[in-house]
Image (tube, rainbow, N blue to C red; front, side, top):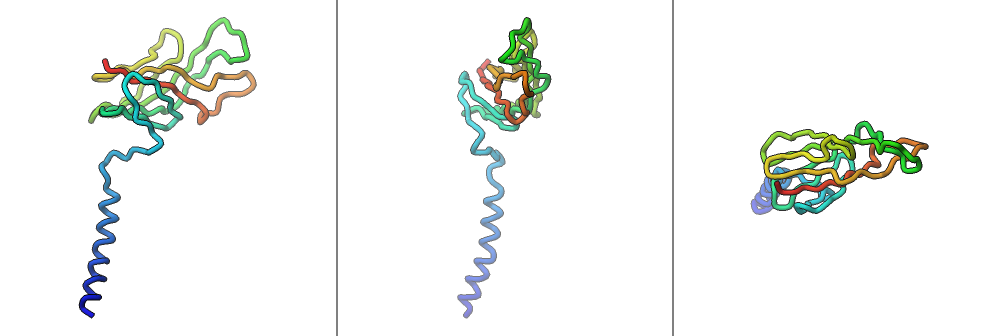
Length: 147
């Protein structure tokens, strides 16, 4: 009888303790769908997704697209237009840094943080004249290079 009571007590203490430890984790709550990328290699992100640099303390989150004035694919334009891609870059223990990257034009296509440069390589899908691109359909192609 005493052995049974001891087992119940142990079980009552161990199960919540194990659950609490499992919930703690390492603090780096990376989503398995978020890629680990190598420096110098292009990668693609959907809005709200984050990539982390392999072996480095750098993450890049694709936040959204603002001001998509790119020339639609089914039109001949005099000017190519531009789109502003907003990303949040976190380097090491520094505060997250929002940045705006541009597809074309003279505005910045890259952003520097200590030790790295994050560049916008491309933005998909192309615009069409008949309808705007839904915000969730955008895909930003980015690259992280060592500086």
